[in-house]
Image (cartoon, rainbow, N blue to C red; front, side):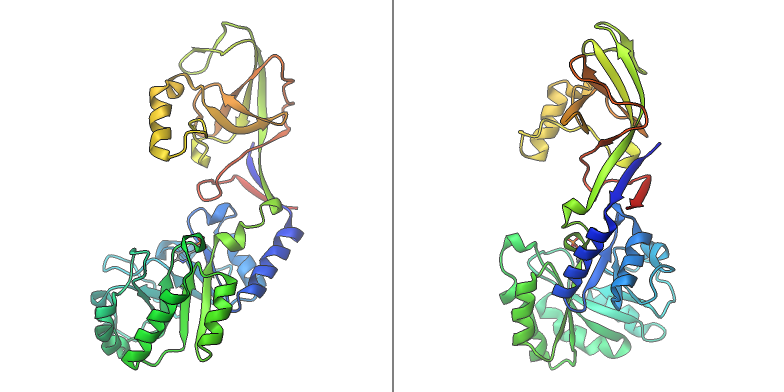
Length: 344
Ligand SMILES: *Cc1c(COP(=O)(O)O)cnc(C)c1O
């Protein structure tokens, strides 16, 4: 029984190749759910693309990619004193605070680092007025470059912000030749590369690389059981009444996979949706729209999803699917853990 991600591998790999071509010296990012595909598969694909560096979110994720990719491994979440940093010459840490850089510089060896600079994201990074302190400490480490984590391209153009930082770096006199950027479009990248010919600008990309070709993959769930029900029948742990006559369909995929109740999608923001879900009693009765499609339409949950299965209600007007068939499921790849990934 499984929730399966089916991948049209020829199409998907064609897309990966086209992104790699548009972003020279791309750094693929693999983190979290492995964008639905999982760390091992994506690490192997990064190897196939022939990239020099693969990025992961955390030090804990290194183990999942280490044996599948032979190049350098960049950890994106900036190092903190509580991190367990492996003694591995392939690992490059991100440093975003002067204090962390100082302890690395004063510690043993010369660890490989990328220095993250504070951008309009305001997440992590060294602010401009501490840049001079950073430069003084770089002798104690092997600085592989500086990094800028930027908002999504839809939030505006990034050229001026990148150029501002390049100028600030140049003003310090620091020797560097590589800049890692996130969320810069191929077009902006081209403009920046032309404006700073001595600088190697490398894009760190996850979503745009693995997920942008939505036709290349689909999520499907096995039908495990189908039960005819009459109007006032009861079912399940709580012995709820069925919504009417029809069928209960038990399908693969539950809370452990990231399948969750959803409020009606016409209610826009998440807080309102959560409130609607609670207040409307949808949560209590399980009358929430499921992400599963039967006969071309999204169907209602008969009750909230369980750990590994979900129960859907089909009215008598809908012909129930056969056990063993697969239903399309509309899931978010950043929150879903699949049982299987099948490359077709
Ligand atoms: C996650 C992450 C990325 C990749 O983000 P996508 O939107 O998935 O491309 C790039 N840079 C940093 C610093 C990140 O944490």
